[in-house]
Amino acid sequence: MAKHIKIIQILLLCIATAISSSCNYSFKGASPPEGIRTIYIPNIRDESGFGLPSLGEELTTLLKTKFINDNTLEYAEKTKADGMIVCVVKSVIDEALVVTGNETVSRRKVTITVSVDFSNLKKQKSIWKKDFSNWGEYDSSTGGFSKRDEGVKSAEDKITDDILLEVISNW
Image 1 (cartoon, rainbow, N blue to C red):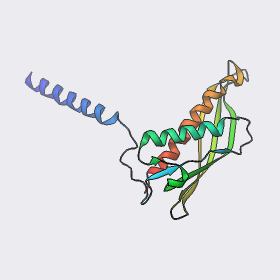
Image 2 (spheres, rainbow, N blue to C red; image 1 turned 30 degrees about the vertical axis):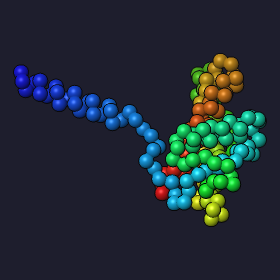
Image 3 (cartoon, helix red, strand yellow; image 1 turned 90 degrees about the vertical axis):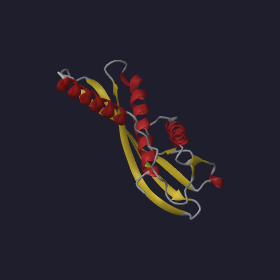
Image 4 (spheres, helix red, strand yellow; image 1 turned 60 degrees about the vertical axis):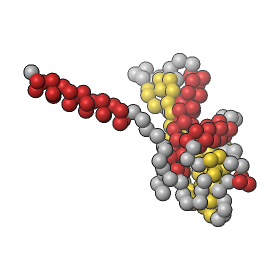
């Protein structure tokens, strides 16, 4: 009987440890490149031709907010910033994802590709240039393209997370 209680106690301790260690994921602890403590993000240009007039503005606001909330780098205006992230939306693709038996598209996928240039303003030198691509999906079986914004928002959220993570890590 005492042996069973001891096994249960150990099992509960293992479960509690696993739960507490796996629930908190954060970008904190990453170190930005040497000499970069502040960051500036100009308005993101949309060269995709996709026809979403607010896409660049939405991405700019979301990316700035993520950097401010992350707090690894302080956000600053260009004249006071150490680094700058210039982003250009290169493409937005909306394509069928799930086709039902009667040839009706029930889910669609929106993929956004953004070209990013991260540079050191003090040294006037590019740190890296990369393309980021991510996607979101939405239900197109009811309302047609009216739910497309859900897929766009999901893709925007994922791609801005990718950019933030790349800037503050991998040093």
